[in-house]
Length: 174
Image (tube, rainbow, N blue to C red; front, side, top):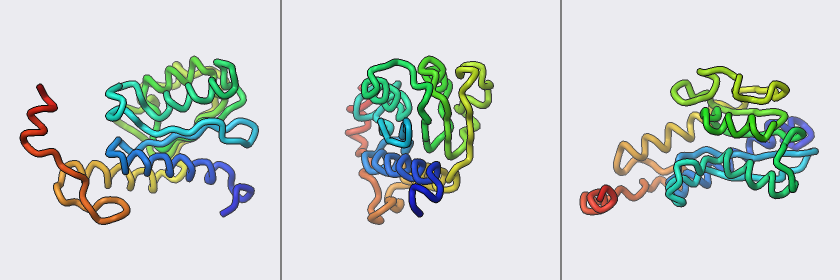
């Protein structure tokens, strides 16, 4: 598939690549790409664990990178492609950036912003959900299955992620 056949799918596949990078880093696999005038100006994936920052969601990191790249705080001519429906925090940030369009993959019925409505977004922001949703969902399911089942298959190499020992778990909680 070329960029010209279906640009939205192309950009969502780039976001899925970011989500796979998050998976490999044992982060919740969510990826985001921001496109302006047909060019990727920002890409990010979740980094909450690595940065020890609960706000380091893919969307938040991508908004910051895009604003820095453009030298402007408003992203009105941009589209956010994200593999999972943004949470309320990220949707609020999308409202502040006035991003022109949001395209997301999998729905998030527990934490997604759609459950509380679109009022937090800029009134002109267009939203489309469900693009490559099955691929996004499969990646998320594989991640959470690997966290619950020691020795579960890793995404690429059939090696389960390192599970913390009891001592490591105790050290992490103190």
